[in-house]
Image 1 (cartoon, rainbow, N blue to C red):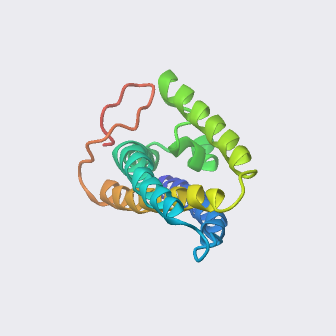
Image 2 (image 1 turned 120 degrees about the vertical axis):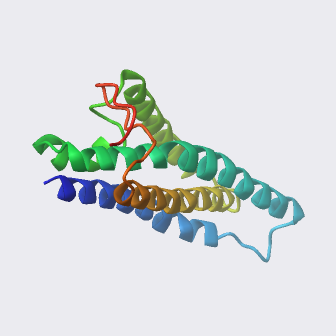
Length: 172
């Protein structure tokens, strides 16, 4: 059951992020590139670079991805029926984690949903510029989550905490 839970946890999150990329990429590609000026190009380049650093590198690669991989590894070794059924949200830290992690998970999710609603009303080219940066950051995140998960599954030791309430400091 642990392997099934781990696979479901990874696949569920992978599909969630992939779905967001799939839905946002057309808006980014809908920018009227031939009609935008130098200012728009500068904002686009700076925004994509900033989102690569803040969302892709700092948010995903240094924070979310190693923790998700550690929780996937933890789930493989400590499955329960509830954790297995809800594996993607378990791996994202919505339950059976520290109080701080739950607060962060729910707060970030709420903030992201509100931003999605607000950005929906922004006209082109600005919406496309925003979406291009988000797609870049999410793609980086998807790649880093995949790499960390592979490492967590094949290595004897994975030195990232799953942040479970029992204060387990490693994913072993």
